[in-house]
Length: 362
Length: 171
Image (tube, rainbow over all chains, first blue to last red):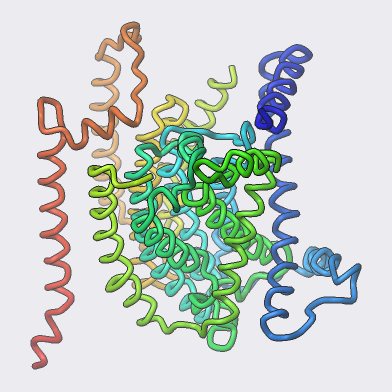
């Protein structure tokens, strides 16, 4: 089988055994933490830079421009240059700010993102936490991130920051509901909250195909609510540059601003990765019922490539939202959530329960 | 070894920040210290590999109640506000109440004969939890669940009525 070649659990197992043999159990575990932590840090930093570059290029394409072109081939090094510039900036502290909370806020946001990214299955054997409550854990830890945003807005002692934080908080809290409910729809279908089980069940057909109508509705709701939860356009009124001078992170500069910036892009990745895992089959290749040769050809593409291909498609769709829709007003955002998405979601769960009960799926 | 280190770390955070929550004069900091306490408690649950309870702790307390508290502080107070210092009499009385409460708790804990769990694997799967939550048989939680839902619904309707009051009066 082509699958075994691409399985990462051999690699991780070898590293684990090697470390256990050469160090004491205490040291081995500590070293494993360091290795896993470094791997995630590196991945997040590099992927974040790549996402910023992609965002600028996608934006440019939608506006018939070229985007960054000067630094490196097709401007590939532009975001690295920007990042170095950001690191060298002076850290400014508003005089009457609450120092402790002001410094703490970016860390809460980024820690919540890191906790959430830990359950994402990238490829077979490439997942650091595989709880039986995977999806529940994900919604639990990502709900902590909003605290960082609220604290940042309040401790800056700036009215724009405070208004931005309030808007952002209200928005994230409301849309969290839709994200959870659309995921709950898929939990009803999968019968499990464990990410590895959910991926495994999609070996034959991805959930968006096998769950047909309710799964597609849940997917669309999840994309809308997920975009809102990451505070991205068209739901970016919390950071509206023209009205709020960028909202809750107005007073932040240098590396602390970079943290907020990075956390926003990690959250974009997490939303896309969860959409990929729950609806689009995770790292499972595309299979069609009885097309044997087609299925075998698809098996030759490594799972990790499948995963990132799907993630990039979802990321592109979310970026597409941002650069084509005008920004919503705050009342429109709340109306959309409470009067449309929430009822649709509730009916959709019932529909999904009916589909599961009558076994009307593939 | 590593488990003990983690346990003492969590315990230290819980103890220190519980005290800090009570003695700080800035109300938002109190909320943040409380957040640390609640998250560390979730950490303890994770150590016991009771993941479900840990996630519930994070969702309900850290993601729900603390956010609610912070929101209400954001709406009602300003950054420069400090809580007033308590008077001598108030401090004395609250110290007395604290010592009495601590003594009672300690006495109960120390008197209780804890026995290590040797029986069946205390490990619950999420399926057990889910089945118990909707089960209407013995030890099922269907009735409590419904009662709590009705309570929450009543509270929500009450909140809406309270919030709407002024508008109807104007008419």
